[in-house]
Amino acid sequence: MIKNKLKVLPLIALLALTSLIEFKALKRYTDDVLLRSGFQVEKSLQEKVKEENLKALEGEEEYQKIIDLENDDNDSSKMPSQAEEVKDLRLRALSALLLDASNNRVLYEENGYNRMPNASTTKIMTCIVALEKGNLDEVVTVSSYAASMPDVQLNVKAGEQYYLGDLLYSLMLESHNDVAVAIAEHIGGSVEDFAVMMNDKARLLGCDDTNFVTPSGLDAEQHYTTARDLAVIASYAIKNERFIKITNAQTHSFKEINNKRSFTVSNKNRFLYMMDGAIGVKTGFTGRAGYCFVGAVKRSDRTLISVVLGCGWPPNKNLKWTDTKNLMNYGLENYEVKQIFKPVTFEPIQVKNGQERYLPLSLTGDLTMLIRKDEVVSVEYELPDYVEAPIEANSIIGHAHYYIDDKLYYILPIYADNSVEKIDFKFCFRQILNLWMNMIGE
Image (cartoon, rainbow, N blue to C red; front, side):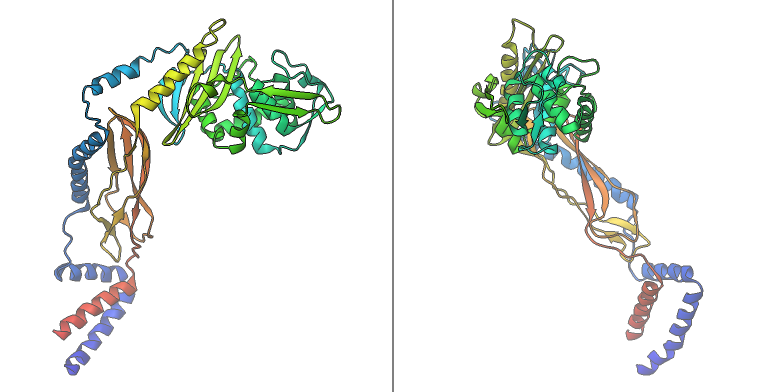
């Protein structure tokens, strides 16, 4: 047996020398040997992808049955009425929207993407920018321009000084316009520069249909937002504990630092006492904007944000409360928390020029969210025909697209489970050597 092995060594050496001269020829030879040795490619990748998509489609019906069963409250007569309820909340606002604060998904809207004036709901952004850019114990010196602001005022005087933290209570509880300008000048250097900061923050939050000109929300050309953008801004703001502490305070007392003038401001947001779990947020009114309100309700399994803009003009001051309650009740009564992530096992994907021919894939995720009883969830998988080595473990190979009522909601990545090295000379030589040694051993 040893003599036989010694006889083939020159052949192996010759093969190695040939490999150094022409690696591509060796690779073709390796593939040929592997194929003749039983390492057959079972089917083309395109066929595998088609098969995987067919399996996904076949499983989709079963998946939807599971979702429907979870949503079933043993009263099928409710299903037709859901769509009717969605269409008729009997709102009076010119623009209205309901948002799931956990993921900023719009649950309901009427003209919710229209650009509108929004009055003092602007101060939500003023407050959050001040909290993030300033310190509560900073001293704010009032300018003559700030002291001249009209309408709702604390009646601060030029040259007076206040702590920023105290002024934020004045801003949010009683919506004082002179205080808004004093804060803006202190944080931004000027009203114009502070407006830039407000708009920059809006863009970071994905609010592209918003343009702030004033920190107070007083009517101004090119000062606008949408119910959707305003809801997203509020959703962000209520995650700040200091913001919630300020906006939910019943009263706050403070003094001017030098002359010791005393002030007490009280919360004008009646919604805090209208619904269980109400946590804010801000009222507003101007002649152009009408009555506006941004509300928030927090329950054990959800937090909802509502926005109503242009909700009546004097004397219809209470319409904003009625509309807000209708929106909130709709969200509380018609949505349930569900896990819509769909576990799936993928066929391994073919690897071109890889030391492994197939690559296993995995998809994980958590898509717990509010779902209405009649909403249809569907999933589409996007995968390439093949992948090219080298591949690192946990590389993104494809995506799973989750749709709710045919509207794209979320995209999850599909990952490579393992690493696959590219075929090289060393690998080819080792494979051929192993095959020859096995043949000799036989």
